[in-house]
Image 1 (cartoon, rainbow, N blue to C red):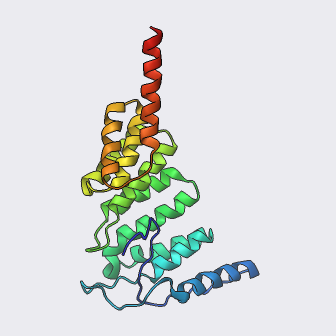
Image 2: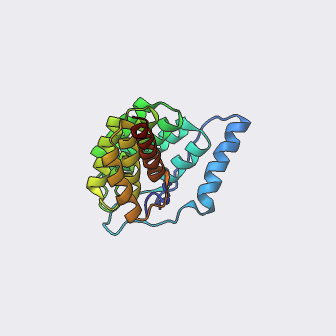
Image 3: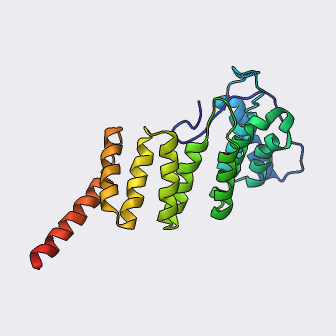
Length: 220
């Protein structure tokens, strides 16, 4: 239901229309967003199994706006849930996750991390949980910035929530490798493989380390 192959699509409730003055290009983008959503990105429903008003349309519209780099529009869509706590308090985690995607697309990583932390703190939806994905995305950012110790922390958090998350084990192994912790890297590589992750980078890196170490020993 959530984060379809690391991309997120949802159902919705209410048609929400913006009125604004736009240039020809802006109108074109606006039309693309609405057409995409109307074209089947979502399916309509009026309440979840828990009787909650989810109103996924703003999520779908926000994602489309991010794809079109209409960041102000995307923030408006995600902010809708936060501005209506009487109806959508349980959607706040998802709203903050969406805001994080906006800042990540803008390469504003400090803001991105803050929004992911808020998403985790407000992960209140009874069926759609985003904490694991937020931790994984934070790990990606930390790895990109060579902040490997923080990456290890968030990947461990993701595994704490779902020990069967093979990708979390895999990327945790990569983070361990970057810190020189080859023993823990090996453990995570084995765990990831057992959980169905077929990437070979971890094993290849470990082989190179062993090969290099062996050559140095022979020279001595």
